[in-house]
Length: 297
Image (cartoon, rainbow, N blue to C red; front, side, top):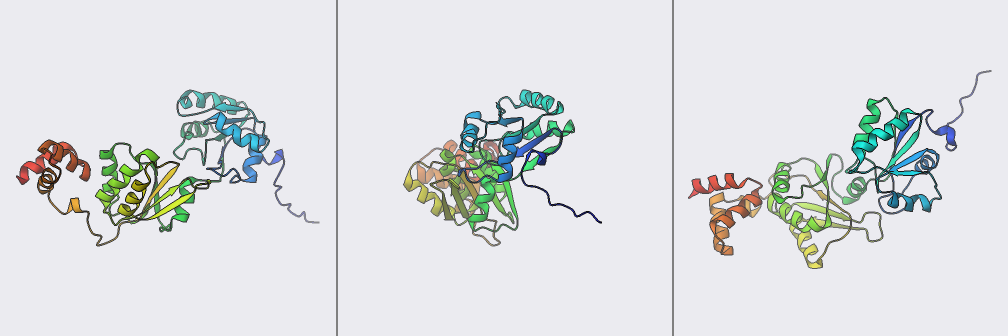
């Protein structure tokens, strides 16, 4: 009689891969219910959980009655800790890697350990789950057929404007993380560089109690948030793809020299201050702005 294949079981320690393995376990980005049954099982059955912040992870583990031993693994110790964990893995340990929220390695610690484990031929097993940028993208209302996730935007305005300049004509939706205290400045840069009419979405506190999606044109969203005062919470910023024939921003329709004169007259500032502002607006160096100013005199 021919044997009938049995379906794989969905519980029990035997489901973990035989031998050592590094499990990349996605954790909730806000709502504690956003974790998979597989993730909970793995967290219970591994020998050790490497955490970005053990205090944060313990909240999740306590909620689900999981008592697995934890150890810190974060951006400040990952170079040394990764080597220690790989020694444990080579000794037969099963280790889960988690971050404070979402998928390990996505704008969070993890890459160094993952790369080292692969180099030492240790199996690396992804346990998928919640991801802030994907949740924000699918609910944004912007096209999802082609998109680019680029992590956190540069903190310095000049570098940020240079990056924004590079995506001005992008044919895909752009997705970024942003710190709440920089959001207004970033939206101002988006408005200046990409145009006030560029469609954006600010996804705030996704999956949490105060979840919010602000959808509209860059200048409209900027003014709306300015009226509120302080912006708080986890932020994902999505920028619509460039449109053919889009109206350029006001600062781009004139030469550097003309723009410098406009700023000097409107804001009653000297040439140096005006040049600095124009360079910031256009995401170019001060020396380049100065050369164009001299040519246009």
